[in-house]
Amino acid sequence: MKKFELVVVGGGLASARAIKAYREAGGGGRIALVSRDDSVPYHRPPLSKRYLRGETDREGTLVEPESFYADQDVELLLSRTVEAVRPAGRRVELASGETLSYDKLLLAPGAFPRRLDVPGADLDGVFTLRTLDDATRIRDAAAAAGRAVAVGGSFIGMETAASLRTLGVEVALVELAETLFPILDAPELSRGLADLYRDRGVELVLGESVASFRGDGRLEAVETAGGRMLPADLAVVGIGVVPQTAFLEGSGIELDNGIVVDQSFRTSAPDVWAAGDAARFDDPVFGRARRIEHWSNANYQGTEVGKAIAGADGRYDSVSTFFTEVFGVTIKVFGDTSQAEGRTFDDSLERFLALYVEDGRLAGAVLSGQDAETEERLKRPIRAHVPESEVAR
Ligand SMILES: Cc1cc2nc3c(=O)[nH]c(=O)nc-3n(C[C@H](O)[C@H](O)[C@H](O)COP(=O)(O)OP(=O)(O)OC[C@H]3O[C@@H](n4cnc5c(N)ncnc54)[C@H](O)[C@@H]3O)c2cc1C
Image (cartoon, rainbow, N blue to C red):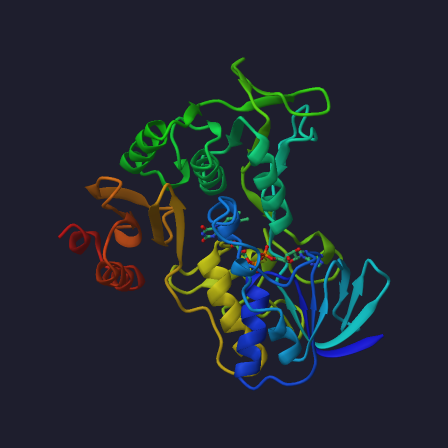
């Protein structure tokens, strides 16, 4: 059995950031990075954008160069799956039969795409998009495809539709709601996006769900519940993700829609921390538990948890943010809009601002085309929960 000071489960952004911050904060000993992926950690946002469009290569997506891991005395255990964690014995068991013992353990297993449970979902040409390999396969398929269908009108579906269209593929986007980006509940933004997509030649099929994927071994068409048959050589399903926590069942580590952690990312087990898409953490800004499936969160939490594991002060103390980019328009979301009501101030796509109020206080903002100063200025009142009367000014 190999012994490590720190075992890191998961090879994503949170893990790479944690290792760097751990070392920078003086964390010693040998580190093992165990990942199901066959690559060192990479950034996922380019997979639906620049990488998919062929504007960057694999190296351009890496969080740290390959040499970083040897330099930091990290043993890379790639293409390996963790099957079980035994906190009482401080052990991690891999599907390969290997067992690792740890003094400290970081769980950052991220999330995995939800699959559509309809006939034909396993046909060639039907994809989900999470890994570099997925993106490469979709890019290769797009090179030969005349027509594609993106399923889902949220981030992944919208970004993929925009990138495939930019590559010259005929694209239809199917979304269950009557608008794009329904989760933000920002009607002016959704309308602006719908106009943009139609202008760029994307067919929007709104208020519709997918009933089946049709084809003989290979995708030929996507059938909607309303009976429409959309010809397609390629379909990308982007209907949300689920945290990858099945391997922790029975471990005794508390799970509840993710791995439950406190403000310093500690789980219910001693010397076990968790961060990133899979962690359900205490957000002191809103006084409630949240799980966030976005880049800025994994970036920030990874750094903070690395410090915490090294014994320095690492904690969640931030206004959460995330971004998406479609057809060159970058949309940002600050704070928590999920339980708040939005009011729009700037309503064009090029310059958009909606503020979200919860219990009479500012809780979030959705914006595009604002300058950096305005963006920074917005985060302070969200953190301070300024009253609605001040928001309106
Ligand atoms: C195509 C795409 C585009 C995106 N674009 C944006 C964007 O524009 N803006 C934004 O804010 N966010 C975006 N995101 C989300 C963002 O990339 C994620 O929030 C971020 O990657 C989460 O990092 P993580 O380290 O928590 O998990 P992940 O990146 O998911 O990494 C988890 C790692 O753990 C491994 N793993 C899981 N279980 C096991 C196991 N049992 N054993 C071994 N290894 C395991 C996985 O293989 C993976 O390597 C995008 C995501 C995708 C897929």
